[in-house]
Length: 425
Image 1 (tube, rainbow, N blue to C red):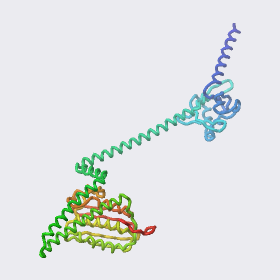
Image 2 (image 1 turned 90 degrees about the vertical axis):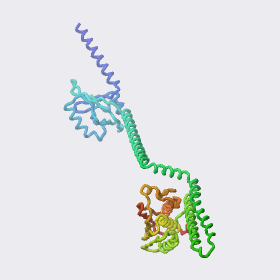
Image 3 (image 1 turned 120 degrees about the horizontal axis):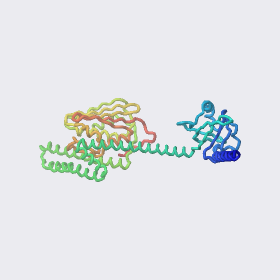
Image 4 (image 1 turned 180 degrees about the vertical axis):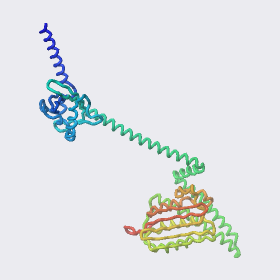
């Protein structure tokens, strides 16, 4: 009976050993057993596969053999501390752990430790899992999350931008129904430029032509010598009206050439003082009664600029100063030249530009609210800005309603690199 119990007990132990051996050999995790000195005493086939070693290559080697060199020095201290008071736990909490293969390559791992004792002494078993695929998935998730965050940020920015635009649009609508109507009118004008040319030309030509026809008819009624004053009055009206028509035609022609890209800026050496004085004499006959153009010039007289473009700019600004100022008001043309720059200022004491209109004053076809019945196409200042851009300059202004306007022109002063060619405007 006693022998039978021993036999059964032996069979049970043998079966347990076989089962443990099967678990050890066929486990899907790498199993590495180290002794108290951190030397490897046993590892299962999965561990050898993970680390790329043959059957007995790792036996007797320190556990640091399986750890990347950059971590192995510090690891010695960590494992000695652990071996003094071993306990079951996972390694590297909240840290990324890496193991080293036989060929020196590294891979991410998850490791848990369990101490145990046998008659041969104290040991620690390490369970090692290759988490390369998990890390790839985590990285994909991180990248996806970053992309989602980026898209969310862009979406929020777009929403904020659209909200700001909507708020600004609502604010503009609430400011004035008149501003909205004018904005819509401007939009239609920009989208239908060709038809606007025809419409404006028809409107602007009709009144001057009627004035010319009327004055020409009335001149015929004054055949006597003593009617000379009356005849001259109508002759002057005809001359003034023809000048206005010429100005309108020049605006249309300039816009057409600008649209076609036919206008180029070619600086030539010019006596700017003489040029300006001649221009003032030319435009003086447009002045109303009592209007005086004061001219102030400082600096060198010989400069480099496109005479024709500058003539059109100054003629437009001085004409506007005369047109939108009452009789008896003064107009000022001030010029200051330097080695590299030319500063020009045209000042009037006219009706000024309303604050609400100043943002659009250089827009094509735009006319300020207080322009009234004063003749004009709304093209002049747009042409001025385009010509200044062509000359590499800038134009700005300050204006107070009822007090006047100051236009400031800033131009470069240097000779062209290539041959000089006269501009055809």
